Picture 1 (cartoon, rainbow, N blue to C red):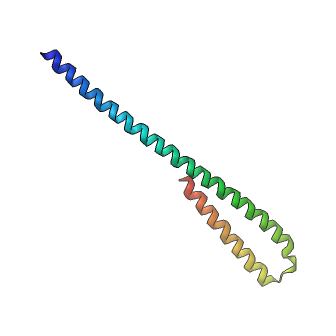
Picture 2: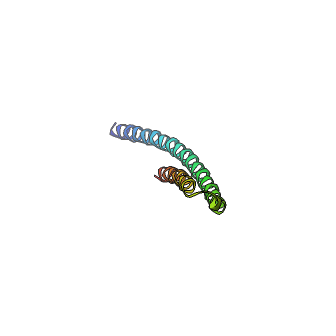
Length: 94
């Protein structure tokens, strides 16, 4: 009879481990999906940042025709956009 009790105990523990394993597999799949989404968002933001940097370069070249107040306002808005993008990238990296 003690062997039967031992077998039952082993079987119960094995079932518990199998359930935990299945839960961990599900969680792992979910985390991988979330990571892929965040990586895609990060890639999108990096592309957007690159586009904005290119626009800044173009605007700096063409801004020679703007007066000083307009230049400063334009630079401020562009820098604000870049800061927002950098914050979003930082949040995605967390």
